[in-house]
Length: 95
Image (cartoon, rainbow, N blue to C red; front, side, top):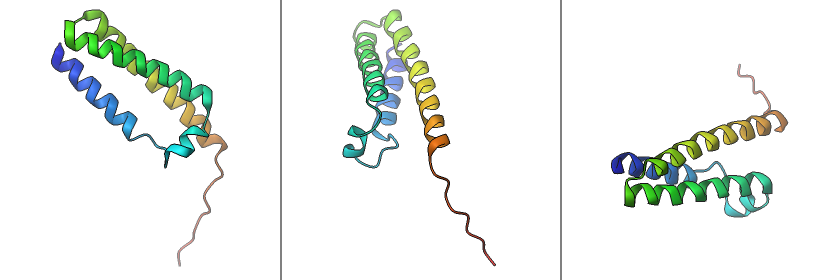
């Protein structure tokens, strides 16, 4: 169980570190509700992950897995909405 928890936490931190935001200033000027909700879920997942690693807690694993699913769902919806409102790129024709 600890190995599973460690893999999940490493992947979660890697996903967070590779967020599709060019810089920290742009992140701060983004959607505050999205940032707050995902930060709170991430904090809960990190705490549950530590509990999972220290105590081999089934509940910790359940919380980490649920947080991962919820974060994936929220991010997918958020990015879908951003894609709908983003200006389309010009199409370049080649000869």
